[in-house]
Image (cartoon, rainbow over the protein chains, first blue to last red):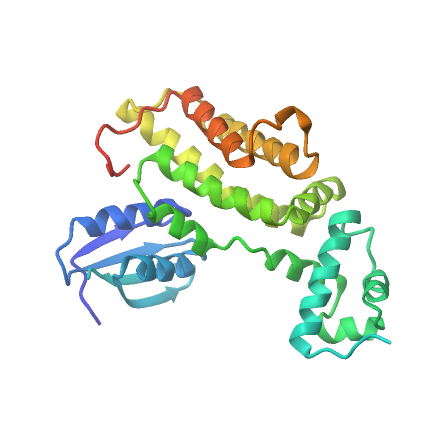
Length: 76
Length: 209
């Protein structure tokens, strides 16, 4: 499993804020680095799939633990 | 006798007819028999695809064209400032309603019928806007980028403005606003809203908020 270079906690926040926060966070990373996003919005699964499709970043993994969701995104 | 359709075509035709009837008469004003009669089939055909009227109503709601993916595309399609993102998201929402105003009629009727499932569904459609406005109106005043206004009152104001604009243009087709197309009216209202909350855009393009 990929190690994260940066963590982003968006628990309790709903679209569009996690997407805007992820965009901002990933801009601070270098190519190939990984951002770990935690979220509680069930819609975030589709949102981050769309986010990666739209931006070209790689969705390394997408998982759920109880009511929390976790995404690993590698900057292209 | 009704033409025999493939299962997917039949399901789509049921959803299309059900949507028109629910938009015209509300959830309680339509029976499975009404929908079957309009389709020229027996009620048993409908029950093969949907176990109940409630399931059919929820499927009609779930079929709404505007998806979260459209919002994500809109969010990423330009500068990340609050005013820019709010305008782009609003356009996605308004375009989806203008494309299919039956959903607006369903929302109006659901409010009158006090249907809890439908109310929750339609509330969720506005939630991206209300949450975004309320969250931003806590953060922006700290950066002196917006006035100290009540976030909940502001989000309600925004929702009320947009809903009324949609009613005027998509339901009543009011002559009073004929000089505006819907996009122009939405642009004006978002401008007014941003002015009302004392919003100051970031000075640099693409500045994140």
